[in-house]
Image 1 (cartoon, rainbow, N blue to C red):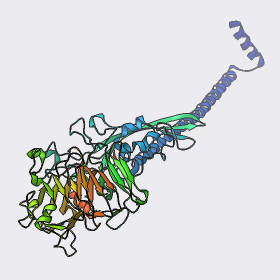
Image 2: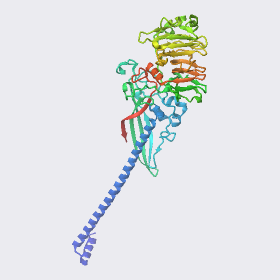
Image 3: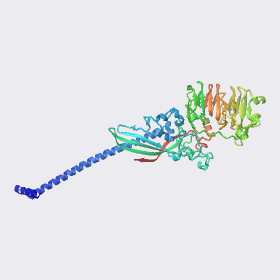
Image 4: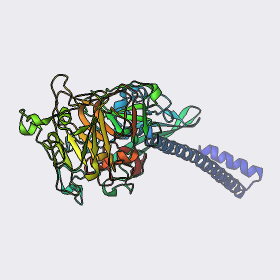
Length: 554
C-alpha cells in the first residue's frame, strides 16, 4: 500500500501538478456530493409529503363514509314506519330485512302510528344489515352494531309494548310518564306512578376508503343517542312537558275509536262483513285503520269496500273504571245475587213506564225512575251527580224497544261486572232494539259528551261477555262502551257515533260506525290518558332519536 501511494505522488510530481491542486479537486467532489445529497433529501421530503397527504385524504374519506353512513342509519330509523325498531335494537343485530319487514311480525315490529311495515331498503339495499353499503367507487360504510344499555331494561324484543310488572328488571324504560295521584312529581307516588324517561341507543358504523377495489383506510364511528317517546304524528311532550310542550293525548288517532283484542291475550276479532258498512270520522271521512291488540294474532276481516284496515299492536290498554255501585258484582257480594240485578224491560211494559216501546231515563236517578232501575242505580254527591248502575244482565226482552238516556242531569255509567254461563247475553237488545242518548237541555238535543253515557264490562271475567249493541240510527247511539272480555254484535241497518273498546266486535249488517274526534277526546280524558298529565300509561306511543349523548372516532 505504501509503495502504491509513493508511486501516485511521484506521478503527480512528474506531471507538474502541485499538491494544492489535488486538494481542491477533493473539495469539489465533497461539495458536489453534499449538493447531490441535499437534492435527494429534498426529493424524498416532497415524496413523503405527497404520500402523507394521500394517506390523510384516504383517512378523511373513510371518516366521511362513517359519518354519512351514521346519518343515513339515524334518518332511516327515524322514519315513522321504522321507529318501533328504536326500542327493539337487538333485532337489528340478530335478524335480516326479510324478518324485520315481514307482515308475519307486524305485531312485534310495526309502528302503532301507521299501517306501513318497517322498510330499510333505502339505507340497506341487501337483506344483510351488516353488509358493506357502497356510497361511490371509493367509499363504503358498514353497520357494526346497534345496542341498548342492558341495565335499562329498555325493551322486550318480542313485545315492547306489552303489559309488564313495574319492576326494575322487567319494565319498559322509555315512557311518557304518568301519575294517577296528580302529585308534582311521579316519584312522589310509587309504585303506581312512572316518571318520564328517555332511553339510549348506541350505533357503531365503520367507514372505508378504497382505491381500485383495494382497501386503503378505515374509520369507526360510535355514537350514543337519546330515544325519546312522543305521540303519533305529534311533536314532543310527555308528562308535565318532560320532552316538549305538545299537550296532545297519545291516543288521539281516530282509529283508536274502535279497538278489538282488549283482553290482551291474542283472541281479538274485528269483523265488518257488509260492503255497505263504513267506518268514518265526524265529518264522514273514511278512517284509514283501527286497532286490534295482539302480539301475534288477531282475526281481522273488514270488507275491502269499507276502506279501513286493522293495525295489530301489542299495546297496554287501560283498566275499566271502578264502579261506585257494586251491588251486583259477584266479586264483592258473592255468587248469590238479588233478583233485581237482572233487569228486564218487560217490567217497564207492565208498570207503564215503557211508552210506545221507549223507556226514558233522565239523569240523575230519582224517585221518578221505574223501580227496577232504582234498585240497581245510585247517584253520587258530586255536582252534577254521577249515576252509577250495577247490573248482572240487561234484557230488552222483546224486539223494537228503545232505552232512551237523557243525560241533562249528569253522566250515567252502566257497569256489567259479571259474565254469564252458556250463550246467555249480558246485554240483549233484541232485534230492532237499542239505546238512544240525548240531552234535552241542549237546543240540538244532542248529548254534551258521548262519555255522559258509558257502558263498562268486566276487566277479567270468564267466559266472555256477550253483548248486543247498535240497533238504531247512527245519529241516535252516542256512547262509550268498554268490554275488555266482551264479544259485541252489531247487526241490521244500524250504527253508532261513539267509541267501542272490546275483545271481539262483529258488524253483520249495513253498519255506519262514526268516531267523532271530540268524542274520542272525551274518552281519553275519562280514562286518564288525555292531556299533558295522564293518570295511566298512554297506550299509543311513538319514538324518535335525538341529541347525541356521546361520540367517538377511532
